[in-house]
Length: 271
Image (cartoon, rainbow, N blue to C red; front, side):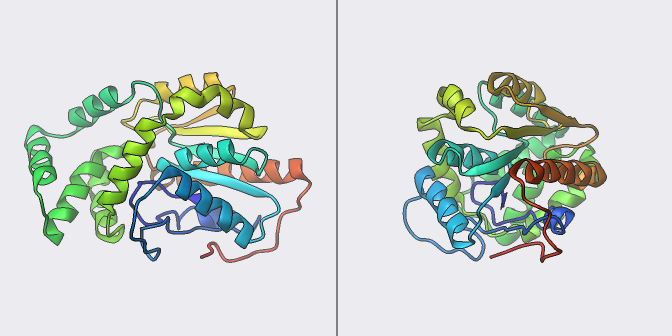
């Protein structure tokens, strides 16, 4: 199961699914309140964890391998805390970030962004309402520094800003506040005991979020950290061959450990 990030974005992991779809059924979903998954009401981390648990049951997954990206890694970790033993393997891609990582992230993001663009981003963020064009501009500015090559990243960010829509900013704010009220930082010893034996962290070396924070987390959880060179926060965009190779190796090993044979080819997503 592929768990997208955000929070507040629709699923965007369609490029990952085909990389392993011949090995096992691959499921993706729009998290509650995003994409084709409408929702009105309060968002909570517990509700989103319960959603994931209910989908695992609905899809009849006897063995579930979780691959989370960005906020999806936080969701995967909290799922393991709430349902220890339910996931047979977990790959945490570009997260979760714990400790004092925000200050170095913002400093690196600002270093990669010209001053006039930093000013423009701040102005757009302060608007009480934005037009469609302003929303796309804001997301492009916010995302292009996530890439190893900022110039190519501009084109990728502009493309994604147009299609990863709409952003549920209300959900983003509520789940952000919930995570600050119940930080994973305080539960790392518990998380270490709940994670399956086959758990790995994966990072893009050029992610503006500090890889050192993930290295410290890997040591704390006693799990491997795989660093992908020349790749940023979405490493499959800049190093697709390396990500494909690692995903396939990870899943094959996980299937072997559970005694599950690779599946026949299936569609690369579920809903």
